[in-house]
Amino acid sequence: MTLLKHPTAIDLLLLLALVSAAPWVQAAPAAGTVIHLSGPLFVKKLDGSMRVLGEQSVVEVGDTLSTQGKGYAQVRLRDESLLTLQPRTTLSVDTFAYDVASPATDAVVFTLKQGGLRSDGGLLGKRSQDRSTLITPGGRIGLQSASVVVYYQPAAVVATQASTRLKSLAVGLASSAGHTDSSYRAFAAAVSARYAYRLANVLASAESWAEQGRASFAVYFTPDFTANLPPAHPPGLYVQVLDGMINITNGGGAQNFAPGQFGFTPSFTSPPLVVPTNPGIFLTAPASFTQPPSTVNSGSGSTNVECQVR
Image 1 (cartoon, helix red, strand yellow):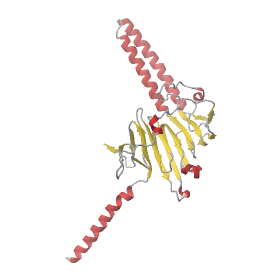
Image 2 (cartoon, helix red, strand yellow):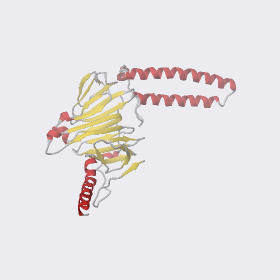
Image 3 (cartoon, one colour):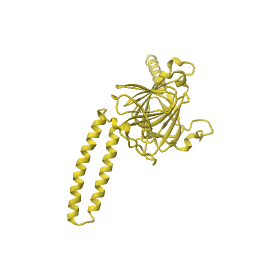
């Protein structure tokens, strides 16, 4: 009986050791903390789960952040750099390695899938300027220690916006026709169908041009953004350098951008270009984002406001 109990006790000890060690093995390293929010901020974790973050929530390596509607979010990273996300933005934190005592291990990689952000460089960018990278569908941006506004407009978003407006026009025509006689209703229906078909063809052509990197007309297109509305400019990658230097590299070439300069490329295969005026990018975060983050909990423990989306 003694021989049977001895291995059982050892097995139990091993099992307890594995269970207690599991969280340490699975936990992703922390990259930063959410310090300001205006609207919902969702995160997709490495295990596929979805959560809603609040102020003081921890952002980990591997997280994919998504702002919604008119919501903004600001994250302070461990090297004191800042990321400010504008509405309808999706950004993943691919790599973040920063140790005060080990500059050789410095590495930061983000991926902007759509939307816009402002990046303000921190301690890592100042001492390891070639190790801070923002990947976008339009090219790789060497952020260095710069302050820069970046916006990427996917072609699919342009198509969706145009399609929505076209549907609204068709609904309006149908509504107007419903209040007139039958002959006018037939006429309005015919006009609506004819122009809907033509506009659909134009839309398909524009989307095709954008995908092939032929949408160079966007360089000369300066839309009106006097209203506080989301950008509706042609697809592509846009940058505005506020301070410092950045570099954009893609399949078409490479280009440096200095403070005060604006840049654009319609696709990964088109060379990045310096454009003479603001092509329509902007990021107007709430005024509260310039204030120090509030501390809700003055006692021990974190104010990590987070709930899981099921």
